[in-house]
Amino acid sequence: MNPQFQLLPEQASTTAVHVDHLSIYLMVVAMFFSTLIFALIFVFAIKYRRRSEHERTTEITRALPLEITWTVVPFLLMMVMFGWGASVFFEMSRPPDDAMNIYVVGKQWMWKTQHLEGQREINELHVPLGRPVRLTMTSEDVIHSFYMPAFRVKFDVLPGRYTTAWFNPTKPGKYHLFCAEYCGTLHSGMIGWIYVMEPAEYERWLAGGTGAESLASNGQKLFEYLACANCHRTDKPGRCPNLTGLFGTPVTLTTGQKVMADESYIRESILHPGAKIVAGYQDIMPTFQGLVSEEDLLQLIEYIKSLSKQPSMAAPTLGALPPGLQKRGTTAGPAPRAQQKKNP
Ligand code: CUA
Image 1 (cartoon, helix red, strand yellow):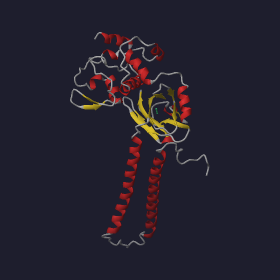
Image 2: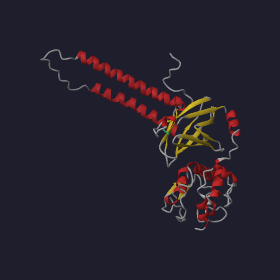
Image 3: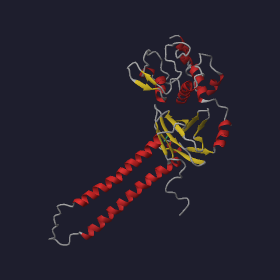
Protein backbone atom coordinates (compact mmCIF):
# COMPACT_ATOMS: atom_id res chain seq x y z
CA MET A 1 0.00 0.00 0.00
CA ASN A 2 1.06 3.57 -0.57
CA PRO A 3 2.88 4.61 2.63
CA GLN A 4 1.44 8.14 2.27
CA PHE A 5 -2.06 6.77 2.57
CA GLN A 6 -3.33 6.51 6.11
CA LEU A 7 -6.81 5.54 7.13
CA LEU A 8 -6.29 6.98 10.61
CA PRO A 9 -3.87 9.64 11.85
CA GLU A 10 -0.77 8.56 13.71
CA GLN A 11 -1.38 7.30 17.26
CA ALA A 12 0.65 9.46 19.62
CA SER A 13 -1.21 9.41 22.94
CA THR A 14 -2.33 6.83 25.47
CA THR A 15 -5.98 7.31 24.57
CA ALA A 16 -5.46 7.22 20.78
CA VAL A 17 -5.37 3.44 20.66
CA HIS A 18 -8.58 3.13 22.72
CA VAL A 19 -10.41 5.61 20.50
CA ASP A 20 -9.20 3.77 17.40
CA HIS A 21 -10.26 0.34 18.63
CA LEU A 22 -13.71 1.68 19.40
CA SER A 23 -14.07 3.34 16.00
CA ILE A 24 -12.84 0.21 14.24
CA TYR A 25 -15.51 -1.77 16.10
CA LEU A 26 -18.17 0.76 15.03
CA MET A 27 -16.96 0.62 11.44
CA VAL A 28 -16.87 -3.19 11.34
CA VAL A 29 -20.37 -3.51 12.80
CA ALA A 30 -21.75 -0.87 10.43
CA MET A 31 -20.05 -2.41 7.39
CA PHE A 32 -21.12 -5.95 8.28
CA PHE A 33 -24.79 -5.03 8.67
CA SER A 34 -24.84 -2.70 5.65
CA THR A 35 -23.43 -5.51 3.51
CA LEU A 36 -25.78 -8.10 5.00
CA ILE A 37 -28.86 -5.92 4.55
CA PHE A 38 -28.04 -4.94 0.97
CA ALA A 39 -27.19 -8.52 0.05
CA LEU A 40 -30.47 -9.78 1.51
CA ILE A 41 -32.48 -7.10 -0.29
CA PHE A 42 -30.85 -8.16 -3.54
CA VAL A 43 -31.28 -11.92 -2.97
CA PHE A 44 -34.89 -11.62 -1.77
CA ALA A 45 -35.79 -9.29 -4.63
CA ILE A 46 -34.82 -12.01 -7.07
CA LYS A 47 -35.90 -15.07 -5.11
CA TYR A 48 -39.33 -13.80 -4.11
CA ARG A 49 -40.11 -11.74 -7.17
CA ARG A 50 -43.68 -11.87 -8.47
CA ARG A 51 -43.75 -14.46 -11.22
CA SER A 52 -47.32 -14.07 -12.55
CA GLU A 53 -50.35 -11.79 -12.32
CA HIS A 54 -52.24 -14.31 -10.16
CA GLU A 55 -49.54 -15.06 -7.63
CA ARG A 56 -50.67 -14.58 -4.00
CA THR A 57 -48.29 -14.23 -1.05
CA THR A 58 -48.72 -16.93 1.58
CA GLU A 59 -49.74 -15.48 4.91
CA ILE A 60 -46.98 -15.66 7.51
CA THR A 61 -48.36 -15.44 11.02
CA ARG A 62 -45.39 -15.84 13.27
CA ALA A 63 -41.64 -16.34 13.27
CA LEU A 64 -40.85 -15.87 16.92
CA PRO A 65 -37.29 -17.24 17.07
CA LEU A 66 -36.31 -15.06 14.11
CA GLU A 67 -37.86 -11.96 15.64
CA ILE A 68 -36.13 -12.55 18.96
CA THR A 69 -32.80 -13.01 17.20
CA TRP A 70 -32.98 -9.81 15.20
CA THR A 71 -33.92 -7.89 18.32
CA VAL A 72 -31.46 -9.35 20.80
CA VAL A 73 -28.36 -9.45 18.59
CA PRO A 74 -28.44 -5.75 17.61
CA PHE A 75 -29.34 -4.85 21.19
CA LEU A 76 -26.25 -6.61 22.53
CA LEU A 77 -24.02 -5.12 19.83
CA MET A 78 -25.28 -1.66 20.70
CA MET A 79 -24.87 -2.18 24.43
CA VAL A 80 -21.23 -2.97 23.70
CA MET A 81 -21.01 0.37 21.83
CA PHE A 82 -22.62 2.14 24.77
CA GLY A 83 -20.48 0.53 27.48
CA TRP A 84 -17.24 0.79 25.55
CA GLY A 85 -17.98 4.34 24.39
CA ALA A 86 -18.81 5.43 27.93
CA SER A 87 -15.58 3.99 29.30
CA VAL A 88 -13.48 5.76 26.64
CA PHE A 89 -15.45 8.96 27.26
CA PHE A 90 -14.79 8.79 31.01
CA GLU A 91 -11.14 8.14 30.40
CA MET A 92 -10.94 11.18 28.11
CA SER A 93 -12.86 13.49 30.40
CA ARG A 94 -10.97 12.76 33.62
CA PRO A 95 -7.44 14.15 33.64
CA PRO A 96 -5.10 12.28 36.02
CA ASP A 97 -4.34 14.16 39.25
CA ASP A 98 -0.66 14.50 38.42
CA ALA A 99 -1.31 16.13 35.03
CA MET A 100 0.59 19.34 34.28
CA ASN A 101 -1.68 22.27 33.58
CA ILE A 102 -1.39 24.32 30.41
CA TYR A 103 -3.67 27.20 29.56
CA VAL A 104 -5.05 27.72 26.08
CA VAL A 105 -6.74 30.89 24.86
CA GLY A 106 -8.29 30.82 21.42
CA LYS A 107 -8.99 33.99 19.49
CA GLN A 108 -9.67 34.87 15.88
CA TRP A 109 -7.41 33.47 14.52
CA MET A 110 -4.69 32.05 16.69
CA TRP A 111 -4.00 29.75 19.60
CA LYS A 112 -2.23 31.23 22.59
CA THR A 113 -0.79 28.77 25.08
CA GLN A 114 0.74 29.49 28.48
CA HIS A 115 2.82 27.26 30.71
CA LEU A 116 2.63 27.68 34.49
CA GLU A 117 6.32 28.58 34.44
CA GLY A 118 5.44 31.63 32.36
CA GLN A 119 6.37 30.55 28.82
CA ARG A 120 3.87 31.74 26.26
CA GLU A 121 3.53 30.41 22.76
CA ILE A 122 1.46 31.26 19.73
CA ASN A 123 0.19 28.47 17.49
CA GLU A 124 2.68 26.16 19.15
CA LEU A 125 2.75 24.01 22.22
CA HIS A 126 5.77 22.21 23.62
CA VAL A 127 5.09 19.31 25.96
CA PRO A 128 7.25 16.62 27.56
CA LEU A 129 6.95 13.00 26.55
CA GLY A 130 5.12 10.58 28.83
CA ARG A 131 3.56 13.15 31.12
CA PRO A 132 -0.21 13.79 31.18
CA VAL A 133 -1.07 17.33 30.08
CA ARG A 134 -4.28 18.97 31.16
CA LEU A 135 -5.50 21.83 29.00
CA THR A 136 -7.65 24.52 30.55
CA MET A 137 -9.13 26.38 27.63
CA THR A 138 -11.16 29.47 26.94
CA SER A 139 -11.85 31.83 24.05
CA GLU A 140 -11.62 35.59 23.73
CA ASP A 141 -14.31 35.82 21.09
CA VAL A 142 -16.23 33.02 19.38
CA ILE A 143 -16.35 29.24 19.71
CA HIS A 144 -13.23 27.45 18.52
CA SER A 145 -12.28 23.82 18.83
CA PHE A 146 -8.83 22.60 19.88
CA TYR A 147 -8.08 19.63 17.67
CA MET A 148 -4.98 17.45 17.78
CA PRO A 149 -5.71 14.41 15.59
CA ALA A 150 -2.63 12.42 16.60
CA PHE A 151 -3.72 12.53 20.24
CA ARG A 152 -7.42 12.05 19.40
CA VAL A 153 -8.25 15.25 21.27
CA LYS A 154 -10.94 17.56 19.94
CA PHE A 155 -12.63 19.85 22.39
CA ASP A 156 -14.68 22.99 22.06
CA VAL A 157 -13.15 26.22 23.36
CA LEU A 158 -15.92 28.55 24.48
CA PRO A 159 -16.00 32.24 25.34
CA GLY A 160 -16.94 32.91 28.94
CA ARG A 161 -16.09 29.54 30.42
CA TYR A 162 -13.32 27.03 30.90
CA THR A 163 -13.29 23.64 29.29
CA THR A 164 -10.66 21.01 29.94
CA ALA A 165 -9.14 18.23 27.90
CA TRP A 166 -6.08 16.10 28.50
CA PHE A 167 -3.66 13.80 26.74
CA ASN A 168 -0.55 11.81 27.51
CA PRO A 169 1.89 11.87 24.57
CA THR A 170 3.64 8.60 23.84
CA LYS A 171 5.91 9.49 20.92
CA PRO A 172 8.29 12.41 20.45
CA GLY A 173 7.64 14.44 17.33
CA LYS A 174 5.81 17.31 15.72
CA TYR A 175 2.04 17.02 15.40
CA HIS A 176 -0.72 19.03 13.79
CA LEU A 177 -2.94 21.40 15.74
CA PHE A 178 -6.15 22.58 14.08
CA CYS A 179 -9.19 24.63 14.87
CA ALA A 180 -12.13 22.33 14.23
CA GLU A 181 -15.00 24.78 14.56
CA TYR A 182 -15.76 27.30 11.84
CA CYS A 183 -14.87 30.61 13.47
CA GLY A 184 -14.70 33.16 10.66
CA THR A 185 -12.73 34.12 7.58
CA LEU A 186 -9.35 32.77 8.62
CA HIS A 187 -10.62 29.66 10.41
CA SER A 188 -8.61 27.46 8.09
CA GLY A 189 -5.46 29.36 9.02
CA MET A 190 -5.94 28.80 12.74
CA ILE A 191 -3.45 25.97 12.82
CA GLY A 192 -0.24 25.16 14.60
CA TRP A 193 2.12 22.51 15.88
CA ILE A 194 2.47 20.45 19.00
CA TYR A 195 6.05 19.48 19.85
CA VAL A 196 6.47 16.41 22.01
CA MET A 197 9.96 16.47 23.49
CA GLU A 198 12.07 14.14 25.60
CA PRO A 199 11.72 15.28 29.25
CA ALA A 200 15.33 16.52 29.50
CA GLU A 201 15.02 18.40 26.24
CA TYR A 202 11.74 19.89 27.43
CA GLU A 203 13.39 21.08 30.66
CA ARG A 204 16.08 22.77 28.55
CA TRP A 205 13.43 24.38 26.36
CA LEU A 206 11.57 25.61 29.42
CA ALA A 207 14.72 27.03 31.00
CA GLY A 208 15.94 28.61 27.78
CA GLY A 209 12.89 30.82 27.41
CA THR A 210 12.74 34.57 27.58
CA GLY A 211 13.22 34.57 31.35
CA ALA A 212 9.48 34.82 31.68
CA GLU A 213 8.07 34.88 35.18
CA SER A 214 5.64 32.27 36.34
CA LEU A 215 1.94 32.81 35.79
CA ALA A 216 1.39 32.96 39.54
CA SER A 217 3.98 35.68 40.04
CA ASN A 218 2.58 37.73 37.15
CA GLY A 219 -0.81 37.19 38.74
CA GLN A 220 0.49 38.49 42.04
CA LYS A 221 1.71 41.68 40.36
CA LEU A 222 -1.64 42.11 38.70
CA PHE A 223 -3.37 41.51 42.02
CA GLU A 224 -1.31 44.33 43.53
CA TYR A 225 -1.77 46.57 40.52
CA LEU A 226 -5.54 46.20 40.54
CA ALA A 227 -5.51 46.93 44.28
CA CYS A 228 -7.34 43.70 45.08
CA ALA A 229 -5.41 43.42 48.35
CA ASN A 230 -7.15 46.57 49.64
CA CYS A 231 -10.23 44.50 50.38
CA HIS A 232 -9.01 40.90 50.15
CA ARG A 233 -6.75 41.17 53.16
CA THR A 234 -4.75 38.43 54.80
CA ASP A 235 -3.53 40.31 57.88
CA LYS A 236 -6.92 41.23 59.34
CA PRO A 237 -10.58 40.74 58.48
CA GLY A 238 -11.22 42.73 55.33
CA ARG A 239 -14.35 43.81 53.52
CA CYS A 240 -13.91 40.89 51.13
CA PRO A 241 -13.03 37.24 51.76
CA ASN A 242 -9.45 36.22 52.50
CA LEU A 243 -8.29 34.28 49.47
CA THR A 244 -5.58 32.21 51.17
CA GLY A 245 -6.43 28.52 50.99
CA LEU A 246 -9.58 29.30 49.01
CA PHE A 247 -8.91 27.39 45.81
CA GLY A 248 -10.44 23.94 45.61
CA THR A 249 -12.53 24.35 48.75
CA PRO A 250 -16.32 24.69 49.04
CA VAL A 251 -17.65 28.21 49.62
CA THR A 252 -20.96 28.98 51.33
CA LEU A 253 -22.95 31.74 49.65
CA THR A 254 -25.46 34.19 51.10
CA THR A 255 -28.18 31.98 49.63
CA GLY A 256 -26.96 29.07 51.73
CA GLN A 257 -25.84 27.29 48.59
CA LYS A 258 -22.35 25.76 48.50
CA VAL A 259 -20.12 26.08 45.45
CA MET A 260 -16.63 24.79 44.71
CA ALA A 261 -13.97 27.49 44.35
CA ASP A 262 -12.58 26.34 41.01
CA GLU A 263 -11.28 28.22 37.97
CA SER A 264 -14.75 29.06 36.69
CA TYR A 265 -15.92 30.34 40.07
CA ILE A 266 -12.92 32.66 40.41
CA ARG A 267 -13.30 33.88 36.84
CA GLU A 268 -16.96 34.66 37.44
CA SER A 269 -16.23 36.37 40.74
CA ILE A 270 -13.76 38.71 39.02
CA LEU A 271 -15.99 39.52 36.06
CA HIS A 272 -19.42 39.34 37.71
CA PRO A 273 -18.75 39.78 41.43
CA GLY A 274 -22.45 40.03 42.25
CA ALA A 275 -23.29 36.60 40.82
CA LYS A 276 -22.23 34.63 43.89
CA ILE A 277 -21.80 36.51 47.17
CA VAL A 278 -19.95 34.72 49.95
CA ALA A 279 -21.97 34.38 53.16
CA GLY A 280 -21.18 37.20 55.58
CA TYR A 281 -20.05 39.64 52.89
CA GLN A 282 -21.71 42.41 50.90
CA ASP A 283 -22.01 42.93 47.18
CA ILE A 284 -19.45 45.76 47.04
CA MET A 285 -16.82 44.53 44.61
CA PRO A 286 -16.75 46.34 41.23
CA THR A 287 -16.60 44.29 38.08
CA PHE A 288 -13.30 43.87 36.29
CA GLN A 289 -14.95 43.08 33.00
CA GLY A 290 -13.08 44.87 30.24
CA LEU A 291 -10.17 45.63 32.53
CA VAL A 292 -8.60 42.22 32.52
CA SER A 293 -8.01 40.03 29.49
CA GLU A 294 -8.54 36.26 29.43
CA GLU A 295 -4.81 35.85 29.91
CA ASP A 296 -4.82 38.23 32.89
CA LEU A 297 -7.61 36.15 34.40
CA LEU A 298 -5.56 32.98 34.06
CA GLN A 299 -2.67 34.67 35.85
CA LEU A 300 -4.91 35.86 38.67
CA ILE A 301 -6.36 32.36 38.99
CA GLU A 302 -2.87 30.84 39.16
CA TYR A 303 -1.94 33.36 41.83
CA ILE A 304 -5.02 32.50 43.90
CA LYS A 305 -4.21 28.81 43.43
CA SER A 306 -0.67 29.43 44.64
CA LEU A 307 -2.07 30.94 47.85
CA SER A 308 -3.53 27.53 48.61
CA LYS A 309 -0.46 25.52 47.72
CA GLN A 310 2.06 27.52 49.74
CA PRO A 311 0.64 29.03 52.91
CA SER A 312 3.90 30.98 53.31
CA MET A 313 3.27 33.01 50.13
CA ALA A 314 1.21 35.73 51.75
CA ALA A 315 -1.04 38.02 49.78
CA PRO A 316 0.72 41.25 48.96
CA THR A 317 -0.26 44.64 50.21
CA LEU A 318 -0.98 47.42 47.78
CA GLY A 319 2.20 48.62 46.14
CA ALA A 320 3.38 50.70 43.26
CA LEU A 321 3.14 49.31 39.74
CA PRO A 322 5.99 46.82 39.41
CA PRO A 323 8.30 47.49 36.49
CA GLY A 324 7.53 44.07 34.98
CA LEU A 325 3.96 45.10 34.33
CA GLN A 326 4.83 48.00 32.08
CA LYS A 327 6.31 45.51 29.65
CA ARG A 328 3.11 43.52 29.55
CA GLY A 329 1.32 46.21 27.67
CA THR A 330 -2.11 44.77 28.41
CA THR A 331 -3.09 46.71 31.48
CA ALA A 332 -3.10 50.29 30.34
CA GLY A 333 -6.78 50.52 31.26
CA PRO A 334 -7.04 49.56 34.91
CA ALA A 335 -5.10 52.47 36.43
CA PRO A 336 -8.05 54.84 36.87
CA ARG A 337 -10.15 52.05 38.33
CA ALA A 338 -7.42 51.13 40.76
CA GLN A 339 -7.31 54.75 41.91
CA GLN A 340 -11.03 54.98 42.14
CA LYS A 341 -11.22 51.83 44.28
CA LYS A 342 -9.11 53.45 46.99
CA ASN A 343 -11.91 55.88 47.91
CA PRO A 344 -15.12 54.06 47.38
CU1 CUA B 1 -10.97 29.04 15.45
CU2 CUA B 1 -12.03 27.88 13.64
